[in-house]
Amino acid sequence: MIASRQAASAAPRALIRRARHINLATRLYATEAAAPVAQPSQTPTTPLKSTPAASKWAKSKTIVKPALSATKDTAAALTEADVTYEPKTIAYRAPEGSEPLADGAGIPVVDWANSFHGISSKPVTEEQFKALMAPVPSKDIEVKPDGVIYLPEIKYRRRLNEAFGPMGWGMIPKGEAVVGNSIVTREYALIAQGENAYFSPDQLPSSVEGCKSNALMRCCKDLGIASELWDPHFVRWFKKEHTEQAWVEHATTKKKKMFWFKKGEVQVSYPYTLTR
Image (cartoon, one colour):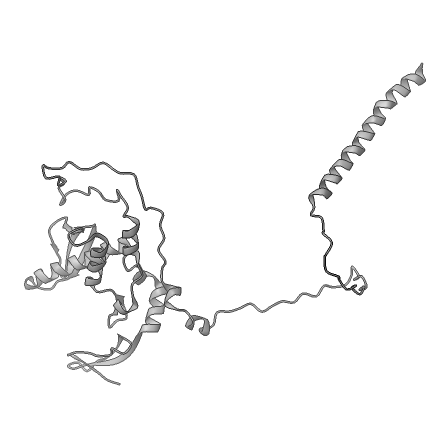
């Protein structure tokens, strides 16, 4: 009776051990089947010479390549395409926002002098985006005597006309001109704060106009026009490739200065003269 019970209890244990072996074999088979099977080559191969097995104590030889360092030749090889910003956007379409009240002629009734209505409410179209963000040709960029590069104001206006059309954009004064000791400032919309040098009351009209031009430039910067001029990488490249320096002398004080010019356009006007 006891022997029969032992035999009965041993049978399940044998089945469990057998099942474990089957599961292990199945896992090994699945692992091997997942590995890619090497296909026999269709071309005859030459027998390889057997090489002696490396000792586990042998030191492996590693070849360390010298790190590449930036050189002047690399910097000189940069082209305009390497330093020009390539604009991209996904904001071609946006949900339509609420429209302002309109009069009988369909013109929006908005107090533009005191309202910021419409700011950042709708992105431009894909075509307008490309017109605004197009790279600035190097020939259009000028350089000041102190080395600051800039885009003439008319170039900004032409870019806005290209994107929106004449009479399709405008600048609205947001307040009166504020006159300081040597500066005049005024806020405009598309929206920016312009400033210009100011020294006497008879200069106020031209100073206010210069203030408007300065505000226009700042507005256009936010629209992406001529953004390269604020990119240090582009500025360094442009000054290296398209500018040169020359000594000038003041006619009255006889003080000498180093002025910047565009290459091939070294010329000065009174009270300065070129000197060595």
